[in-house]
Amino acid sequence: PCILVVRHYTSDPSVLDWGAVASTYLGILSLGNLYVAIGLFASALTRQADAQAAADELIRAIRVQLGSSRIDVAFLFISAQHTDQADTLSHALRTALGPDTLVGCTGEGVIATGREVETGPAATLWAAHLPGVIAHPLRLSFSSVHDQFSLRDWPELDYGGESAPVMLLFADPFSTPLQDVLGVIEERYPHAR
Image 1 (cartoon, rainbow, N blue to C red):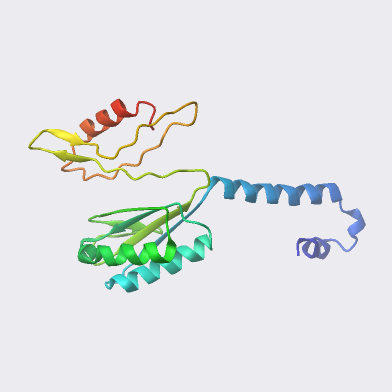
Image 2 (spheres, rainbow, N blue to C red):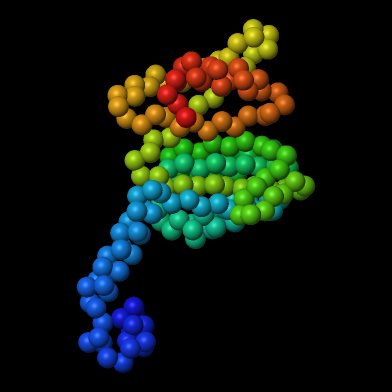
């Protein structure tokens, strides 16, 4: 199809520099491979009140964006109106999309696709295909009674010259002692970013 476009702009194909045309195709192919190697990302937002209808809408939108690519990690954010249906929603997403790792939380505001919803039912799903990345969900809990954190099931990481782990932290900014949490993470994983 690109050759047809080129021919449309020049009636004499012999004047084309075929080396330049071939290197352009190679560059486009290489750029596509680079994007695939880096990863593919998608996000979807639904305002559906019913959990199954919300899941169906999220699944369709993610599959449109990612096609049949494996989903390595997915983040589900739901409004308070979906709290009672969180199990149904997450089960439907796990069954249809099969993410290696699915984490989620509730929030006052749900954000995706350039929109923020602060009132009414809403759910958003961020999904990614990340070749070569290992996602390991961790849970940090704090006991105010014992004034300590629980790091149950946190792995021992041996960096061995590999890249340092990257951590994403989802926390309630009003009730989580963030400075203390960051101190615990720095102590346990000094090379983490």
